[in-house]
Image (cartoon, rainbow, N blue to C red):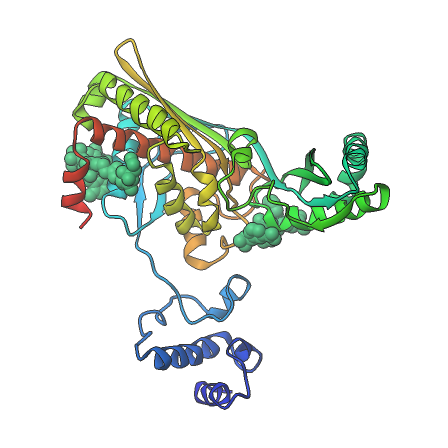
Length: 402
Ligand SMILES: CC(C)(COP(=O)([O-])OP(=O)([O-])OC[C@H]1O[C@@H](n2cnc3c(N)ncnc32)[C@H](O)[C@@H]1OP(=O)([O-])[O-])[C@@H](O)C(=O)NCCC(=O)NCCSC(=O)C[C@@](C)(O)CC(=O)[O-]
Ligand SMILES: NC(=O)C1=CN([C@@H]2O[C@H](COP(=O)(O)OP(=O)(O)OC[C@H]3O[C@@H](n4cnc5c(N)ncnc54)[C@H](OP(=O)(O)O)[C@@H]3O)[C@@H](O)[C@H]2O)C=CC1
């Protein structure tokens, strides 16, 4: 069917809005939907319809497609970083609408380059899924938890039969009365791993139900914890736990931020540590989520997981007149395969970092992406702390952000 016929069919009630791809190619379906939606709202979706990839390519990623939301993309870098997985000194694409953000992160990265570079390491790699089971009471809960602790290997064989890449690393039982939660943790290699972990966990749950009194209530019981602020992710980690640090000589701090190591360290203590504690925050940082969100948008990550990406602690201390600063992200959920990573602009962005697709060895590309994001986010922390310490935040946003 062509666009006109699809529009008429929806208006006549013969087709539902989400059924158009069964009768036309994805671009024609999107064009018809655009016309229906634009007419209903008495508006135009002309720009939304000017996307630069075949709609077919986006079929696994979107339903009821009308076009694309285009977000400007900038770059920061080159990132001078000594990492375990990252190669060379790549640029990192950031997509955002916040003026001054890219400039700020770039300033922090430039300061780290001037200081000889940062260091970054992935400390842990564990994507989690935590189903909740019903039992009769605490006796059965205890029995189930004990069985699980003794049988992780048989759960691993069931889980790993569903994937050629994922490896079950751990299963931690949590009991609340007649509820048993099992927090499964996987090495998902280069995939962010939420689909992979969910499918694998479903298979393991069948074994739990067969061998214990526990009955599955929900495959996700919120102790995972996906896309919600949660202390468990801050403490135990989720996805990649990754840290970056740097020592900036006092002269570099003065040159790039117009302030001193002591002033940045004090701003960090009073703002990021004391202020965050008083606020009851899980994020003891200035704006790690800014870099995480912009990098996620650019490289095809699941944007809702910026929630977990904000679980980060920034430290800053004066060492012999220099500034030592670090950023540790407890739960950075990234992948270079799966999700939105295959979409054309996102895949190009991954190419800029040199991490498109599966790594060699598997997992190394996602590790490298995590190291790049952590390094850039540390740059963002340094720059914003510097701006606050020198009282330049408002003026910077007056000049660049409006
Ligand atoms: C805006 C700057 C960077 C100016 O800073 P400046 O020192 O005047 O800039 P400069 O012209 O002297 O250049 C210094 C370096 O900045 C970079 N730079 C400079 N300009 C650009 C540009 N146009 N494009 C790309 N890079 C730029 C670049 O790296 C350059 O070094 P070079 O490479 O030339 O050797 C600075 O004032 C700044 O960083 N301010 C802080 C702004 C900021 O961090 N905003 C973050 C968002 S705020 C928010 O969302 C969260 C918040 C604040 O609510 C969280 C909280 O509660 O704390
Ligand atoms: N299901 C859910 O509950 C949730 C899903 N999501 C969505 O899940 C998606 C991400 O899930 P994810 O599992 O990462 O992606 P995919 O579902 O796209 O699966 C990726 C698959 O790629 C294969 N693969 C090929 N090469 C590699 C490699 N080098 N390393 C790892 N895997 C490789 C694996 O297959 P194999 O396993 O056969 O080895 C893996 O399962 C996103 O779209 C996200 O929005 C987000 C939150 C919750």
